[in-house]
Image (cartoon, rainbow, N blue to C red; front, side, top):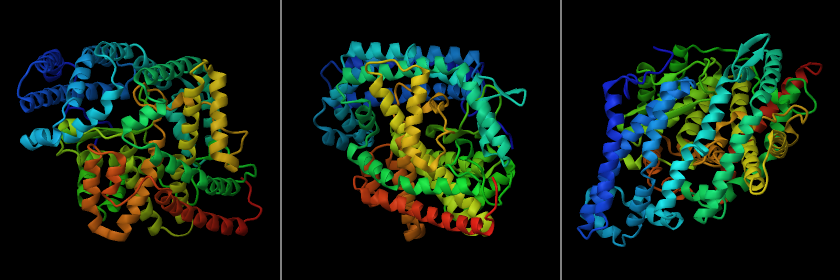
Length: 596
């Protein structure tokens, strides 16, 4: 199998006749879309007009998604790809001209008062009934057609451009490690090294590299948040968070219930971190560079083939269709595995349900953590698979539910691996799972606090790099408490996390906590119900594109607005922490003079 993904299912390259043809088709589809919208101003058969509008939107969406996905994936592995940059600019400039048209269309949809009658008259309209009801809700926040047009066009050289700058700088900045140049992705992967000297040296090299780009990235962050604040005010939302929640189709009551539970359980996570610190020989809390230090005796390094077999052995008993999809992903080059210069850091999955395919980027280093990361991204791919029968305008799901299948995958594979292990291996696997859970609770909470502070401060001040470092440290201290050594935190986390740098997707932090805890609640139901749970799970995943978060959860009999659900999920983690601490105390008692 190949180590890099193949994009041939989209296009074979920029000179592919299909790519050239589809780029030329975009203006034609835009004109056809405008023609349909112009006809809405005339008296006519409303059902026929609505069908024509939805069909035109479907066609434009198909080609726009296919082209933009190909360009995005090319840029993800080569940030210096000039052809991708040029194609992206051309495509998004053309698409930005439809903002006014889209606003007109949405307002027209919102004006329809007989949706039930229209849905009953036409199966296509029936499939989009939820989209039409959502258009009614969103209409109150739409601006004039001309203003919508200007906002969309200006974003290309404003918020979107600042986000591109952050991605370019972080993927290209040179990091010096042991006298040799490397990149951020490679240096951050060293945090998982078995050698404590490597972990610390990599952390120090990483922090030393950020000042080269911190000022430029600070400007990017400030201007993106300023733009969002301005748009929030213009549209009439209470805040950036209010806008995000409404766009994500999740209630503030749900968010508050989840956050209140997280805050109550933070001391448990702090106890885990302090225990890990003691195991490694530290007495003042865990230094940041030891957050991902492997524990126990599981020094395995996985090849790609071993990774595939490991995943299949754990997922086949759970769901045969998920295992079949994993085999397909490895066999058909869905995955780009290893870090290299110009490739963006982290991991993601981008899917195109219309082509029944997803693409996964990782920066694989062979550790168990990397295997779990791949399982996470394959969860996104499975989510996409369950949307393949939806019409194309019903394949996008909101931020909170976006992490459901991915974190469910993590829970399945780690729970199975821990159950199979014994002794130090069991402790190591348990600690690895707690590492990940601490990230979606403590680290995500710190990111939520940081972004909240930046949005508020940006209303009347500019936050230069030193101020952003202060805000990041403040958020980390509140979220991690005495679990971390305050002398060794990470003041530059705002530089390397791309989640902050989107003008259209603010607060892309709490969805990870939501997904992690929601997935654990679903996993508990799976343990109770067994195979009978799977049809409801698949139905739930498909519904994420056509329902709000609360309605999706109701499919599984869950009330998200009550802290009791979140407490139950966190109780599962707390029990794991208690088990880990008990194992650690035995280990410490057996080696009282152990030094880190």
